[in-house]
Length: 224
Image 1 (cartoon, rainbow, N blue to C red):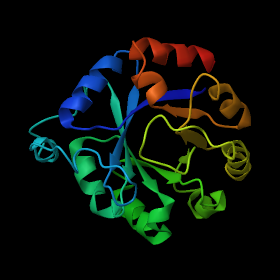
Image 2 (cartoon, rainbow, N blue to C red):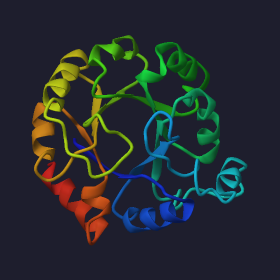
Image 3 (cartoon, rainbow, N blue to C red):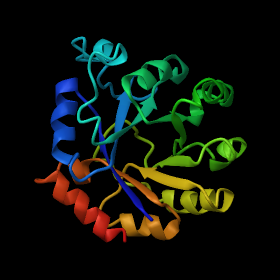
């Protein structure tokens, strides 16, 4: 089964509410990119445009938009994910994606402390060898390959190197979920699946369409 997951880079909490409102009836989960402006060149909420919503989330005074209908996967594109995991677990994240580039020791610490509370996936930048995650094969069930060197920005073109990287990772992790983030569209989706991907994270091709929920349903049909 191929999973199709819409992705959002939130400019503000209001922006997140608006975008989730467009797809929650058609999606079972959404990936939200959290960018600190240090790990990547872009900055997203709650590092900017936070008007107290994040504090209300972690203090459980407020819930993530449509949290009863949709699961949240937080992609932590941050320099110090270990410092942020606790808050996002409190905020209601079902799964957190952390980058192997944060350091194997940091990820080990995160999994040891929080692995019983939330599910984790490990993301891999384009420049990082896929073998870097070999030590985590028994510790997580999902790896996420970035489809471009430029992360944190939607609308990026897929780097053709990704297909060989998917094949290499599939050989290393035959039973894992392999997700692709960046550059997934109608043209590349089937090629990525053929290479071995079984989860597609789709940003602009869904969220910038005229009717995002219909675009999501179309990708579901294409991936069958």
